[in-house]
Length: 488
Ligand SMILES: Cc1cc2nc3c(=O)[nH]c(=O)nc-3n(C[C@H](O)[C@H](O)[C@H](O)COP(=O)(O)OP(=O)(O)OC[C@H]3O[C@@H](n4cnc5c(N)ncnc54)[C@H](O)[C@@H]3O)c2cc1C
Image (tube, rainbow, N blue to C red; front, side):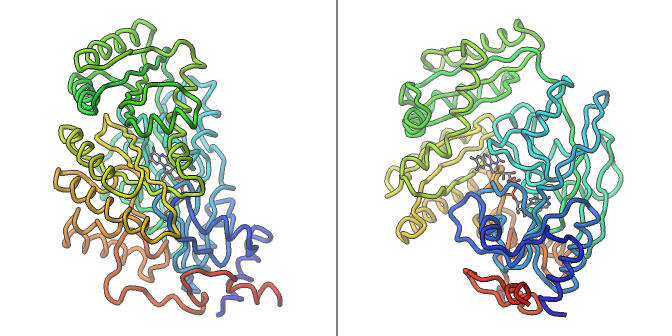
């Protein structure tokens, strides 16, 4: 069989939901990160699990690499089809399949986005609280084990996903998990697939745990003379068990960027953003009062509640826009984002050492943190065409990850491995654990076709032979290997 034969089979299956057009391939050639783009040879848009099965079976037969694609908002080059092949875009699988208000759970197709789900739940009194900022798909969030600003209270995708439907590399559809809140039945395949970044299969359906929508919500901010005071406040808040729904830290460089980008006029100083959820106004008032006392003790200034829901929304919009505020510091740049997470007692030390390191480098590095979890990002706007920028960003990241690992932390708290964090996996997990991961990959994807080149660093020889029948592989592809098939 030849690549023309595969393309023709995909067209038989999906009709015009197969694209080899340059614009569509270009859209699927990268996520939001700085990594070099590589276009897939073709993009397919399945509308059901059965269609995904047929696509995967056809690609497997032709030994053609496949890369699942959600909203493309990931930050480590996850969706870049480094070995070409077919990009499987799940966005047309966007139906909410089932909702149980009594059980607080919902089953959705993988392409449903977080905001779409929120709109669907609006009138039910329930919510899906995980918020990675971007309007990511639920499938992409599961695949990256995402979290975000609300993880401090509601957990991450690891806790939110009850079960999945996954199409494995040979085209079988398996169900993992049930709707039960707990289970001891066998290996936990749900947790294996959550965070697998499309390297073990394509997630087509996700059953999620929901939460009641809070009756009362309040937001507040507060600034500090020093980073230490801000972090010490957060440690006390977490240790005392005050159930803050969000607590986010922006350093002075990020506050400056945010003031400019979001037209705020706040002190250029380390600043904490809080959100409180409760059953009543009295309940959130109590949380806010307790937090206000703690921050005052730690040298916090102007602990201010947002005066209205609109003011609260504006505050959190500004927080969500920090990535773009950081990029705006260097027009035309792309984002290089670090993502370490450390035990919270080490957070102040890790942040202040990192700030010193960034200040001594040639790059700007505004910092934002989901500090209640010990997770923070340095967002360095880089020019990908400038080797000095890239080399410096590598050096800063290497030192930061080394620092975090020495403190008992991880190289990635929520963004995932993709291409960017592969080189740190052995240092984090050890060679033996990496061998076990490779054995799992080999067992589930023996021909290395599911998002190849991600998560597991290459062994020697580094690149599997994925040449024809799928197509000749080049680092930066400009024409589709299917172009000839299109013309004939
Ligand atoms: C401004 C901004 C802020 C962000 N903030 C956060 C944050 O606070 N927390 C956080 O966790 N992330 C954050 N992110 C990163 C990003 O939003 C998450 O990684 C998100 O989970 C990716 O979802 P997606 O639908 O865009 O997936 P994509 O980027 O399309 O894909 C991500 C990975 O998942 C795989 N994948 C996608 N769909 C499937 C599927 N159905 N089955 C199997 N594999 C699949 C892909 O192959 C790829 O490896 C942010 C991104 C941006 C741009």
